[in-house]
Amino acid sequence: MREAFEDHDVVQCGMCFPGVVMSLTEFLDRRPAASREEMKEALVGNIRRCTGYARIINAALSLRPALEAVE
Image (cartoon, rainbow, N blue to C red; front, side, top):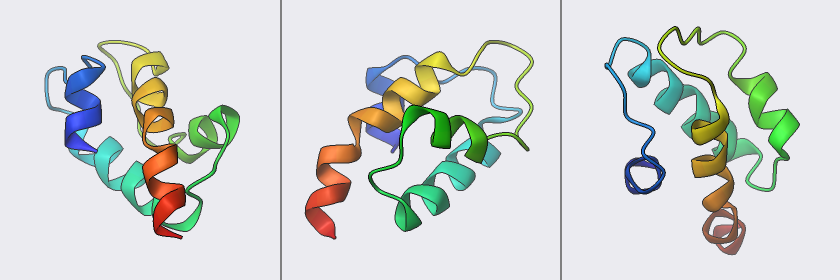
């Protein structure tokens, strides 16, 4: 997750980042093949003020092949 976030230039100020990482990690453990919309829904409780969610979702989507291989 950390490398994917770095590769997609996701890291911002750090206020919301821990919650986003924890939420997505837990969600992707359960749903490794989740769609973009499902990932957005998984982040509903994490309010991000400094930027949107596009880079976060793109980073998480980039992890899908590796996550699916673990199943």
